[in-house]
Length: 107
Image 1 (cartoon, rainbow, N blue to C red):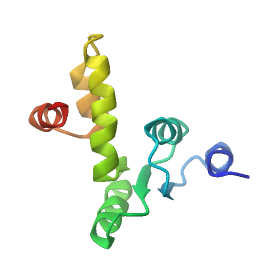
Image 2: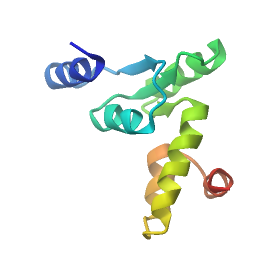
Image 3: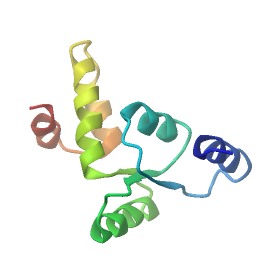
Image 4: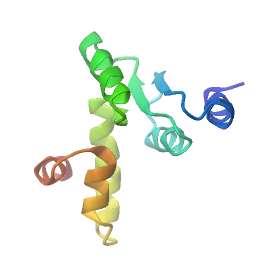
């Protein structure tokens, strides 16, 4: 069973359990897939202890958390779709970022 199958099974049988993926994989499509399957966080194995602890705290508070470096890549990927008129408010709500933070990430 791979990580994706594991997330599907856990969320199917125990939907209230919080899942934080710790992975060496930095492929944005995989990050999006595991988040869409219900993972609550995604941390790179390159993350330092402070970021890991911060991510755990965010998930405990009911937020999704993605490693900072991966978040930037994800926002850049999303910003490609901004040309298609994607709702910026929805993006900011989904990733719990401000208008200014989104603007900086789009640079």
